[in-house]
Image (cartoon, rainbow, N blue to C red; front, top):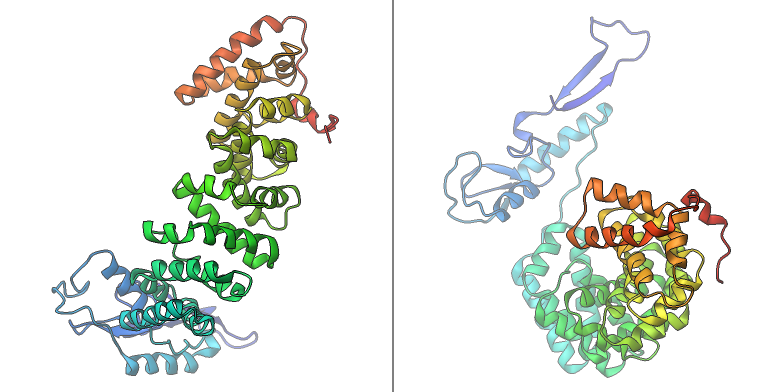
Length: 432
């Protein structure tokens, strides 16, 4: 039973009950959620619902009134101000029971209002009117802050293509001069991902990408975070943007700095995702540049100390770097590589295990000098036992094939080698 309870004061006579329960009047409850209505609206069927509940019902594709099951003549939702005032008065009367007065709801934004403001943004963009465009974008931002319903309405009315077109135009004009406007556009874009093709084209243009890199370099943490999220969304949607980004001066150095000297977990995660797509490119030069910066050592540190999501991303980056000879050479030279990879097998997630097994396999297959060192080191930190267990519990076909091959490669080295606990790798000397 839904309601509020209040304990009676000590010392007062009790009539057999330690608690008094306050019942919510039935007509104050939403017929869908059965909760106290905060923003009651009436449908064409004459039944009143809480706005959030009925909008969820209608957005799910329903065309009937939930109570009467009648097909609705229209989807208009008329605010029931009389009932809302009655609910507010009831809340005030029962505040001693811990009931808080519901605030007077703001009128939600309408599609026509969104369309009008988007036309204003387009007009400002065409005139390169930074002040006018900024005012319109801030208005959209304020609407979005008011409610999730407003966010959905703004996105559904085509805001993303208009905003990204403005971002492209003002980036082309001058991202230094228009920095505040560009930051505001990215802030609003945060609740519009994933983007449509037109929006991705606008945001992935050369001038837009240069603007995003500049924001990463020169602006505050909030701007850096929004710019990084935009880059992550772009590269996750289409690999071609990775090659365009890699061609921009300082882009790779800035991304690496976020890994080496982290400023926030969200930026580090997004940076790892962006770098993953960059090093997944067939161009060996990109991998080579990151390796020379010291990315192998940096991601090994992250793998060793981070939580699941970040660990998976770092393992993915290391896996891609080891596709190149330079990346493998750096991995061979780092004392953490094999102990860390073996430790993460069956310890983080299926994806982390796949990356770990594949990277060890790659390092053992392509090892040239000191042949067998990788296999011996893997045996010493318990790789043989972990791979056997992995085959028993099950894994993907590719990982199973590589684990089986690794076991065959490891077997000749088992005699006379003592397995040490893989947690001991923390005391190993690091290459930097």
